[in-house]
Amino acid sequence: MNEAMLTAFVVAALAAAMPLLLTAIGETVGEQSGVLNIGLEGLMLVGAYASFAVTLASGSFTLGFLCGAVAGAALSSLMALLAVRLRASQIVVGIGLTLAGTGLTSMLYDASYADTRPHLPPPTPVPIGPLDAIPVLGPALSTQPTAFYLTWVMLGFASLWLHHTGPGLRLRAAGQRPEALAAVGGRVLRLRVGAVLFGGATAGLGGTYLALVSAGTFTPGMTHGLGFLAIVVAMLGRGRMLAVGGIALVYGIFVAIGTALQLTTIELSNDVITMAPFVVVLIVLAAIGLKRTRGGQEARPALPPALATPYPPGD
Image (cartoon, rainbow, N blue to C red; front, side):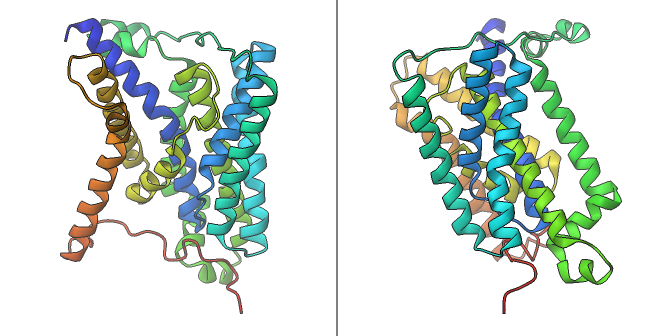
């Protein structure tokens, strides 16, 4: 592979990793508060469609990203109301959000764009001058939009906030020992609602990045399980944002490898290439499970004990 092909490979890997990373950041915060949101697939699709429609009508990518975040947060408010406030099953509500988001966006797309199938131009890149001299990586980073850099800023900020601030400590206490947090005056439900809305906004941004930057269009069901994979990434990260970022990049690399294989003479089914990143995740999960059974879990942070448990607990 020459330098141009390697640069294209890095660009493809980053484009695939960013939607997963954005979604997994919010899910990590939500899980640390004790809420498991398996409706990320629907939230991503709602964010993707809303941002695509707004950007197509206005021509503003900034407005599109804003509307994608608002749409994801708006739909996640149902999780905050039903699962957090009214103590309904987080699993059932999450499934409902996935079905609602998938069905709603498919219906709206078929009604508005099924005949024309419009596409968007790529967003304006933000070149970083000092990086241009770096072979392969410099040209790849120079083609990225503002949202790419803001995603990494958000990752760093979320990591610092979650582990090095008082509010972050209280949020983690809501997932670790909610009754102890309440005993010292902490607002468990308020913290969980805020975490759910933040996770909905980032999931909407993940769908927005997928539609506006990675694909340049919207198609029904375009996430193809990416929301469920974000849940796995958040669980593997165990609240460590840097681990979440690394896992998302590994996923992007495997997606880029699959794309590169399609350009070679190697004859592989497209289905095999598409499922390869998910198979890698399953292998990692199996390896972690085997390590736990052999007593190697002590060095790893555990999932919050109150994850998916309503507060206050039911009678």
